[in-house]
Amino acid sequence: MEKEQVSADGKFRWIDPHVHILPPRRMRGLVRWVKKFTPGYPVSEDITPEEILDGIRSGGVELFFNLVFPLWEEETYDLNRFNYELCSGIPEALAFGSLHIDTPDKESETLRCLDEYGFVGMKLHPFAQRFPAFDPVMDPLFSVLDRRGRPLLVHTGFDLFYGMDLEKDNLIRVLESYPRMPMVLVHSLFPQFALALQLLERYPQVWMDMTNSISVMRLYLEFKRSGQSLPPQASSLEVEEVERNQEHFWALFGEYPRRIIYGTDYPVGFGEYQKLRDDLDFFDFPDETKRMILFSNVMDFLHSVGVNPPLR
Image (cartoon, rainbow, N blue to C red; front, side, top):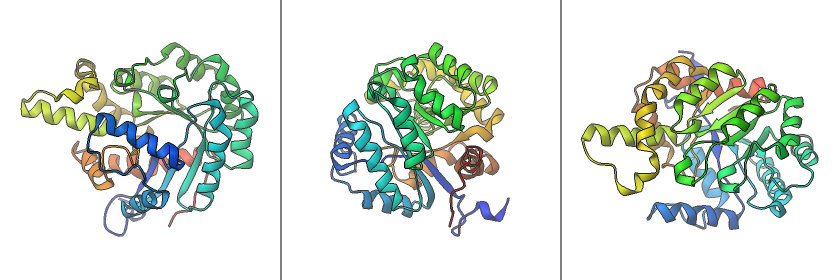
């Protein structure tokens, strides 16, 4: 193993491609939402950017993607500006912008994010934003990213939990129409891992982010091995679909380990960084696979879109 892939404490280095530091009102709303289905979740509604950053740094993360997304059109400009101003003062932060489906000039706002703010790419969370991410009305966004070779990160998966469905046909349309736009499918279409495999095989611009999917699969396998029934709060985990897709989950890591990354949803994911490292270690993947998923794949991804971030 290359020495530079291991941190001073002997752990694999980690770049976190999925963090949410938001304005105070949005941060409070996000934490309240999480606490609705996870009572006692140990994060304060008043958590500050400084506290989030302390948690990231204490977890040994060297770089992170900060992701924002407007819940209504009027928020778009201010939220992107917030992310620019925040990340400009944080050496480890790589900012992504976002749009709303009602943003009137999607091309101009995307160009502002890339050129004026220097963002790496754009992020959409269609289930939280409550609009179809791959609708043709979003094509001006995709067109800019395609011309620039810059990435789109988009939430996929956990359909039952959100009460929405993946737009598979429109997703395919976008992948076919904009092949120079790298696309990271956040949560890796959980639990539709068979489809994830098909997309990786067919479209070289596709990447999978295993944020939350690793932790949920660990929970599922632990309950299954114990012979216990899943708790009521796991009713949204699409157990039958997980059963049908188990072999494809393993196949993702066996066949495409170089196009998988692993984020956290910090500070509102499945726990602190050590807990999330433990979730990955639970699967006993080869060290080389874990090294790639945690660090080198993200570096390869960034280099492929022309971004060369400074590292400690």
